[in-house]
Image 1 (cartoon, rainbow, N blue to C red):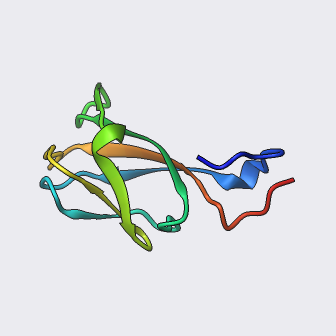
Image 2 (cartoon, one colour):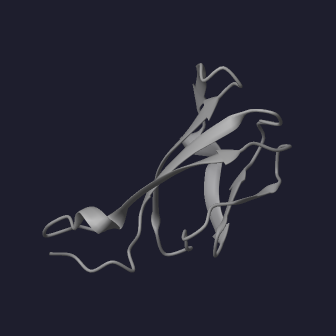
Length: 89
């Protein structure tokens, strides 16, 4: 992970997206392969936190994240990342 001199709050991004089958491209608007994925949390339809899936998540392309093995169809994912296109302070 890069060393930061100061954190520009515009760098911190978080969104909630719909889940999908395992190994499916998930759209996360604004994320890029050079960004730092901080966490991916799996929530069921009631908002109950089911799991931290960060260790199996990866940024595979611009606007795209993928989970390697967990199906989240019908549920939600909370995705947080550092947008490295935003300059440091």
